[in-house]
Length: 194
Image (spheres, rainbow, N blue to C red):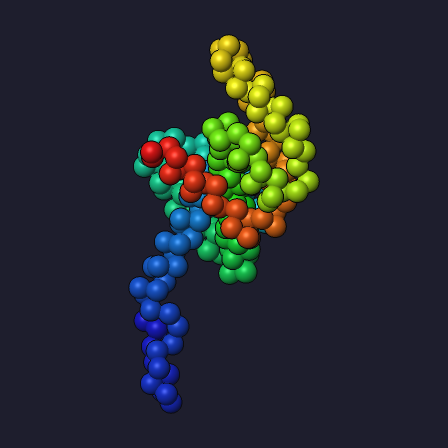
């Protein structure tokens, strides 16, 4: 029982429901850690004492035994300071956000590549306007080579080279992402719908 403060009448400590919610959050964090590779784990601020428990949980494949070992891992994690668990959560969230940003950038690059191949010089003019460091002649040649590859059913060497070139330009010019660079993605999806 958690009892009450005699002077104020307030309950002391957390309720059992809150303790259960906290325990379930730690269990979910443990599941995330078990799903990571050793290389990914090495990048996180996981205490050395937890690593053997994480590896052991990964090793066990029997459903019930795995569940029991995961519960044991969560118990060991609850013994750590709250700051340690928060640091692990923050590191996992940053990776998730960085991955989402990277995927969004790749989608922008793919959308630009598709527009350049479909619209030609009109899309190239817009791209040059947003990314002034781009070499118009080089991009025009890559677009031409890609279209020629498709016509002759050759391997997509120029297609990939065009993607690499666009990716370098888009990643180097991160400022356009804040100025509405997402429009080409919408245009490309509208073109695909038509």
